[in-house]
Length: 305
Ligand code: C5P
Image (cartoon, rainbow, N blue to C red; front, side, top):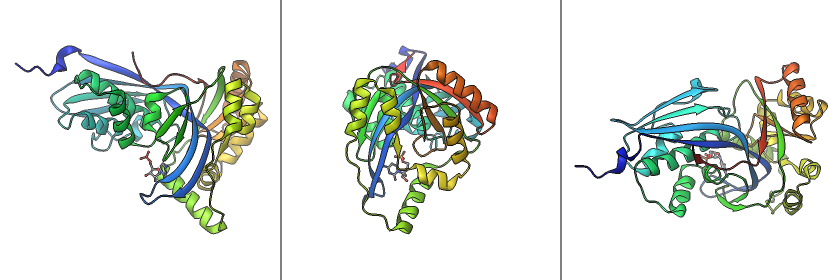
């Protein structure tokens, strides 16, 4: 009789949140090809649900927002790769219900990987410590540890080394989801190209102390004034129409707008929930995005539901 605890639970569902980067400074390219960076992540209330159950073979199936663009080959899908990282012989069926935009700069794939890691360790009875789970997450991608962590965090290294950030209050966002996605490597490559062309000075990635203070104090207007993303010029260079989206959100009454991570989702910070609903309605009416959503943050990282 197999003592493998696969049958302990028929299925495990883990909910994982999207992120926005409140601050993203990209430094020099490292020997391993990644860029050194300093970032402040905030997890926001757009969620993917990842359900894992015992099966004869490893498989991945995706439904929901943008599902057609997500590879179902477990070798290519980050959630499938996460299962193999937990057990090279993982025989599980993974179902991903997507609400986080695909290739949107909101770490949707990373959230799915984090959720799959957590679900597979539980389903397969793998007794990893939290440190082992985080190390596996970092192997899978720079944003995957934050997918587990959630809340608000400072990320350094390639973004995978996290420390929690004290954050007071709730932040209300409007998210403008673009018609076509952007591939993260292409956006970093565009930043390198732009920097080479400008012969820019060595970029700096110091800790954003002003932003950290504003978050600790819950000063939303100050946070809005300090939003910063070094990848934004590269995302705008690849998708120039995002300029129109950004100004439309601010015209509609947002405190500030920013490209989320590598884009192309534009994130608008609003004074409160009511303002976010108004800005979302106005942005939707202007037709500058495929869809417009409201969300709040910070929310927790991966959790079993
Ligand atoms: O870590 P992850 O696989 O999510 O990164 C995707 C791509 O984004 C990398 O292959 C790299 O091109 C780029 N990247 C980078 N520097 C980072 C994080 C990501 O250049 N710190």
